[in-house]
Amino acid sequence: MKTLWKRTPPVMALVLGLAMVAVACGGTETVTETVVVTSIVTETEVVTEEVVVTSIVTETEVVTETEVVTEEVEVVVTEEVVVTETVEVMVDDSEARTLRIAIADDVEQLDPALGSAQLTNLVLKNVYMQPVQYRPGPDVGGFSYADTTSFEGQWIESWDFSDDFRTITLKLRQNLTFPTSGNPVTADDAIYTINRALATGPAGPAWVWGNIGVTSIDQIERVDDRTLVVHDARPSTIVLPLMRDQTMGIMDSVTIQANSTEDDPWGRDWLKQNYAGNGRYVVDSWERGSRMVLKRNPTWTGFQPYFETVELLTVPEAANRLALLQSGDVDIALDLSVQQLATAATSDGVKVLSVPDRNGINVLLNNQAPPFDNVTLRKAMSYAVDYNAIVNGVLNGQAVPSQGPISVNSRFFDLYNLEDAWIYEHDPDRARQLMAEAGYADGFEFEMVIRQNVPLDEAVATNLKAQFADLGIDMSIRPVTGAEMFDHLFGLTYGGMAFRGGLLDYVDDPYYQFFLWWDSQDAAINWTGFADARIDEILDETASVVSDPGRREPYREAVTRLVDAAPMLWLANANYTLAMREDIGGFTLHPDGLLWFATLNRSG
Image (tube, rainbow, N blue to C red; front, side, top):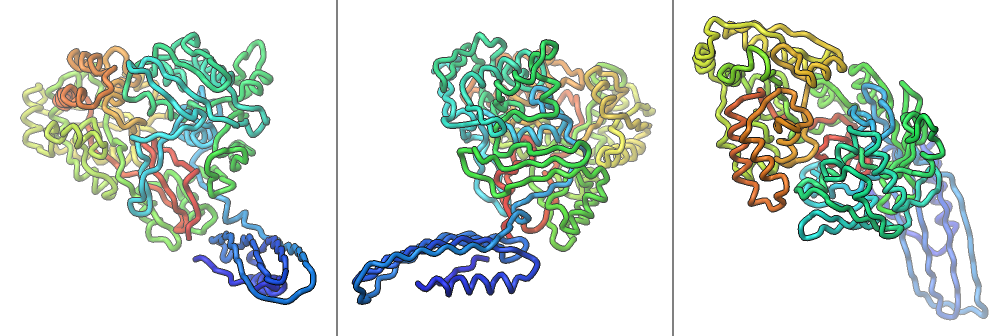
């Protein structure tokens, strides 16, 4: 709702009206208003009034407007009169401009070089300014997708690639300061940030810079206080998508060095708990295990977010997060189960967004150990799965069946015509035939490891156990801690299958998917132990190809070979789901699945 005020030249009429509004609203709101009226009256009087009104009409609505009224009337006067009146009435819109989010666990730490956990990445994305970020796309019905083909500069204002894509000239944005120290953002801070990443790697930003081709600080040339040149970069279609990674924020070198020691030259201990960045939000306070408060960055040179304050409240029990959302004590509740999302969707004042996404619900098979070192048996398991039972029974329809390693919701799935590469459907008879060919006609037994106390993992595992039992397959389920799960995945020590919830490729590009998972020599997370020499060749051939037509046929071949080898069970592509109060708007889904606070608002 938008209230339009009609104003007459007498100032007291306006003041009286505002007083009546304040009385009518009672104890539920306070109005703050400053009205400045300057009238110059001559023989032909021109009255120009500029009135800025900010008021809260309801607890969930803020009306802000500026109206300029010019009236020309004829009066007879003998002298020039200047009238200036100022009226102040208190207005407090802090509640409307505060976003409260219930999270399942505390943020791990604040050092971008150590970022890995989901909640850490969420905060890093919003409080550290990355080199670039995706532009928001058009609204498509209550939400929008980030435009993965269009980028806007953050701590860099512009970038220029040489013809061979091996040299990148970066221009830093002007007039930036670090809000917590007041220090200016300079090229020296950028060089320090890159050097620190390389020195404290190999994870986080060191991994990102390495994939851009930067492995030594000697590759970074400082031209002047605003210009850097990256030499010997790696030509790739994913250079800019990698540069928007949440770990790539620029850092206040002066402040970090002041808090470093001889034993800790990069200030790692200090940065785990403290903040030295520049983003649309800054860390205002952090009570470990309870609450983190972010404040809107007053020095940000771009558009200012709607919410002045974001509070992240640690609420370990999902049922309590749902209850707080239903009562209106929080605006967003993260990490609700499928059943809790269904309950939220029918609650007064609550809505649930369900946005088609690339989130993969996949089961990992250990290709290096029996029984799944047998490719024929892996194919049998792919036919044994009832994909619709997973989509409708476990995910409550908030997904679609998968069709291989590239999500059906990826823009490349249709672009590269990958639908015909998929060969599996639920076919128990075909599964039995292949089991017999693999030497397991009488069935077999194996173990699946899952993360403990994660409802999705438990539900998927239980459903698959029942499906496989019909084929004489005995699957036991072993819950493990998150740390144990990573040990099993990286060490390939799990005994058959592993499931750890949704797996999302942070960059929507087939090269990213393949070098992340399927490069037998250098894959970052080859958690299946899969190897295919021809796929390795395709990755080598396409790594530096930046024109799209030159990649289509090679990746169609790679996808086809991968599907045929069945190193995973690709079950479903789950929607991104988010439960929030009905008056929260402006949601933009980014490919990394991290909630972007900057575009959110309270739209009523």
